[in-house]
Structure formats: structure tokens, C-alpha cells
Length: 66
Image 1 (cartoon, rainbow, N blue to C red):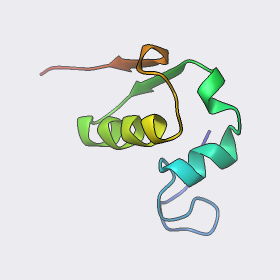
Image 2: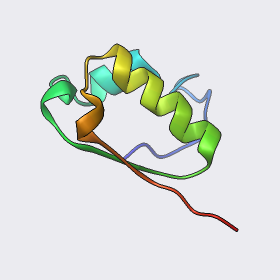
Image 3: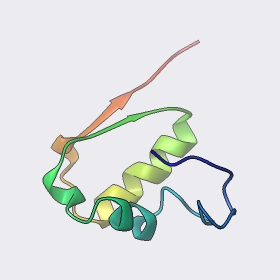
Image 4: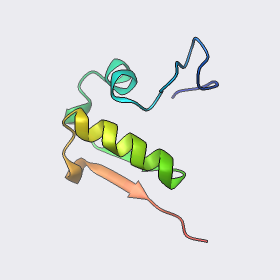
């Protein structure tokens, strides 16, 4: 879990960026990742995961439509 405000010392400026995700889960490319939330957030996280070498088949998205 990442809890707190973006930019705070505990969370940092980009909590879903590649550096932050790699620090939280060093072997992230070996795991399935589930994303749910606003589309722009999921796009940002998915890009970070791609840059970390997580195969697309291991990234699962839950999209909501209104």
C-alpha cells in the first residue's frame, strides 16, 4: 500500500513511477499486477510497469464506464 499525499516525504513526487514501484517491489517483473482507478493513473502506472519489464500479459486492468 502507498498511503499519503503525493509529494509528501513518505510518498514522494511520483508514487506510481518506475523508481517508486521498483523500490516497493524489487522483483515486480515476476508478478501479476492489478490496476484499478482513473484512466490517467492506470495509463501512467502501466507505462511505468512496461519500463520495468513487466509483460503486458501480467498487467490486469479494471475499467469502469459511466
